[in-house]
Each structure stands twice: as structure tokens, then as C-alpha cells.
Image (tube, rainbow, N blue to C red; front, side, top):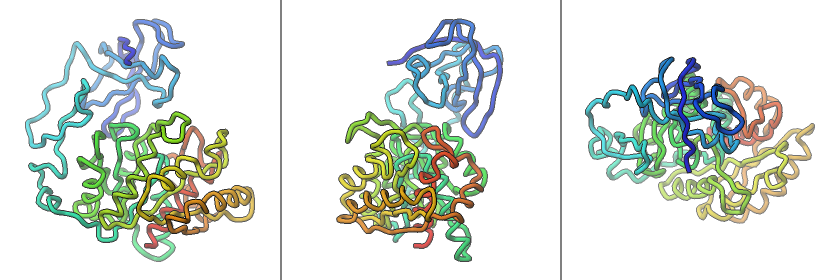
Amino acid sequence: MITWRAGVVVSLGATWPGAAEVTVELEAPVGTATAGDSVRALAFPDLVGSPEIGDRVLLNVSALARGLGTGGYALVIALPDRTPADPPEGPGHLVKARYTPLQAMVLGVDDQESPHHEVLRDADDLAGLPVVVADLHSALPAIVVGARFAARRAGRPAPRVAYVMTDGGALPAWFSRTVAGLRSAGWVEACITTGQAFGGDLEAVSVHTGMLAARHVVGADLAVVAQGPGNLGTGTRWGFSGVAAGEAVNAAATLGGRPVASLRVSGADPRERHLGISHHSRTAYGRVALAPADVVVPVFEEGPLAELGRRVADQADELGARHRLVPVTAGADLLDALTASPVRLATMGRGLADDPASFLAAAAAGVHAADL
């Protein structure tokens, strides 16, 4: 379950909205670290307060103990000697991360106490809003790049984008530097956290109300639905958090949106099941998504990605029985646009130069959505 450790904050690191890095000297060993060693830790000040140098902190070091990812962080659970002040009294009764020790009470956009409740109470229609659905959080910036590229090419203003974050990965939106960077750059108008996820500009009970808030509260031209950082997978057909991408397609269609499926594509993943179109996309869109969607198939120019492009086209054929396959050229001009992203592009530890097909596929979905 949880591996606990205690330590003392010895230095402060980077901060971004909702998160603060600190360096903690451990009181006891964990994993490859010995007592007295320093580890990177992450605190969410709205939950635990703001650590300062000299503070004793309690840490969740489960990921370090098992050598897992989670950004390489220990997570601050509490400052036992200096607990934060009570939050200000205010409206809202939605509880997220429910019945965990750090459950948070928030004001939902669809809450009875919300100023938007009347708008959302009977809202039932996205009015054709393009909704791009993706498996991985890393697809988000590339989708936005593609949408802005298409708008610029057509001489239109950049689209107003809302990010609807599901709870398949990180629960706190604060964990994502990508979201913080896109919000700071003005490329994403709002982050809407749904289900058990929290910390967005708006909170929603479900993916459905998250999408409706994107349309009726944010006034988005385009919504992107994807989990937060930290995709979970077990190497089995059904045991991965991206299954929810298929359910998001169903939700978008049910609400009268225009679902656009972004394929998870890789030319560099060492695992055969993820080469070309990942089995995650083939399962989510081919088996889970019962409503038809526009499945964007990237068309790579002749060159290093040409052979991969043929593999992707062949794999996409199996999705054509239920969905509309939309070929979109993913060439050098789109690749150039990706290099101008205001946030770092990285997926499964690989950057744009390591696996350009991954980001081009997501950007192609953004191109199509903007053209709708």
C-alpha cells in the first residue's frame, strides 16, 4: 500500500500553479537511497501547506521504493509540526479523491451552489462541438499545436480550447507542468477536472458535465479529453486506463458533439503492441467506442516515417467498420509547428526527435478538429 518515510526539507525547488518541488533529507533508507540521502519531493500546497527549509515532512515514497515513475518524486503527505490554516469558508460540496486521507472538498461547476448551475442543470447538447479524445496526457499539447496550425493556415483566429481531464492518471491537475504551461501561454483557456480528478480551473462530477461546461461555460471552440499524467497499463488487453478514451467518444456523441479520435502512434516504442497504432487505441476505439467517431489517420510524407505510415494505414483499416477514417497529412510543416510548442513534448520518456510520429499523429487530430 503506502511506504512512509519522514525527512527534513533542505532546499526549495521549482514551483508552478498548485505545486512546489522541495529536496528532502531522509531519516531512514528507501529503495536505493540511504538515511541522510536527499530525494526530490513534490508538495501540493492547497492540500498540505507550503513546505519551508527546516520543516519536517511526512512522505509517500511508494514509487521510489518500487522504482516506479511518478515523475521521480516522493509526495509530501503532511507537515506534522506546521499544519496549514483552515481553508476559507465558501460554497461547494463536491468531494474528490473521496474517502482517502487527502480528500478535497471543491466547488463543482455543476454544483447547486455554483453560479453556473442554472446553465448546466438542463444542458444536454454540445451543438456539434469538436471533441478530440486521446489516450495519453502527452497528446494534449500536440493536439493544441495542430489545431492552432490549422487555424493559422486557414486565416482564422486560434481556437478557444478547453482541456477536460479525466481521472485515469494523476488526480491533481497541479501535477501537470504541461497544463500549467499551456494555460500560461494562453493556448488552453481552461482545465476542467472530472470524476475524482481535481485542481482544474473548473471542477465537474463527470466527463459529461465536463464537456458541457467546456461548451456552455468556457465557450470553447474545441475540447480535448484525456487523462492526466501517469497512464496505467498492465500489458493486458483490457488492463489500461486509456480504455476510458472509448467511453469519452460515447459521451461526446451522446451529447451531440463531434468526437474525433486521436490515435496513439509510435515508431520508437520497443514493445511490439505499441508500434504503429497502439493496441490501446485499437481496443478503446475498436471495442469500447460504440458511437462512430472521426478517426484521424496521420499520413506521413515519403522519408523516414513512410514505412511506419503504411503500417499505421493498414492497422487503421480495422477501425473503419465502425468509424470514419480521416487521413490527414502530417508533414514537415506540421513538424515545424510542433517545435514551437510552449511546453516540452515528451511521451513515455521520448521527445519529439526520438518519436516524431507520436506527436504528429496527435497534431493531425488537432488539425482535423480545427477544420471542422
